[in-house]
Image 1: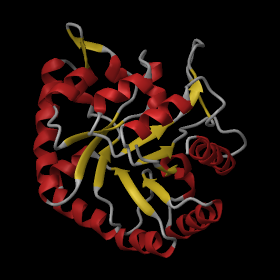
Image 2: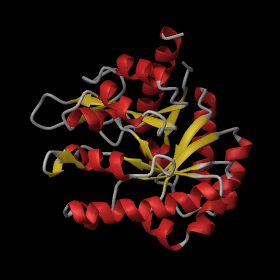
Image 3: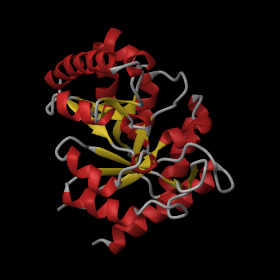
Image 4: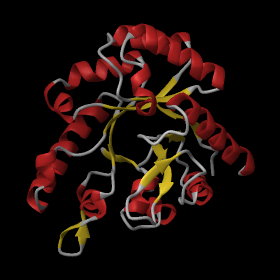
Amino acid sequence: MIMPKVGVQLYTLREYMQNYEDTEKLFFFLQNLGVNVIQISGIGPIEPEKVAFLVDKYGMDVCVTHKPFERMVNDLDRLIEEHKMMRCDCLGIGGMPKEARANAETLRAFIAQANDIGRKMKAKGVRFAYHNHAFELEKIDCDKTYLDIMLEEGDPDCFWFIPDIYWMQVGGVDPAQYLQRMKGRVKVAHFKDGEISGSCPMITELGAGEVDLDACFKTCMQLEIPYIVYEQDNNFDEDPLRSTEVSFKYLQKLVETNR
């Protein structure tokens, strides 16, 4: 077993990094909070060289990103170069293109394309990874879900996952158990919490919802998943910065109680 490194998915704080000056202030805030692991997603139109400079200046470990699938298709070499500037070896997408969701045939076409992109990435020292929401646990081909098919037909060497434990539970599975199916194919897990049993799922700070975060943390340790990042899309306690402080401290508590 290993102890995962914990950090923050910056999509949570996207409104604070739409220009260079604000992004530097955000990195300063995170550094003071004790954060040195980040996922970069939702960042504004800032030159990659400047982002890499801030990563180095504030000692951040960029464990993964989310980038448009279109860029992976049409601008892969440059995209890989940008990630190597930040010493990031995992390129994720936040979900499949809308057209891939239409039926099992379009899903399989997406998987085949992602496998091809993933092989090209691996040849250059980086990984492709897919982030789930809840819809991937809906059935699309007889008794198989989107995720079933992705797990079966995605190349284990080249098609990895960024499991979101909250959306797994919204989708109707036990996330701690379902993570077992992704063994060896996860670098980063998203820890998100929220209300699930009500009529409308609602995301919360970590520890304020219904997800068994401790069980998921223990599973990540057993599966030797090296990184866990907090993510919260909306419904903040006071503001995203305050929610980040609350949730990151909760992750730190999980580390301490599971040593």
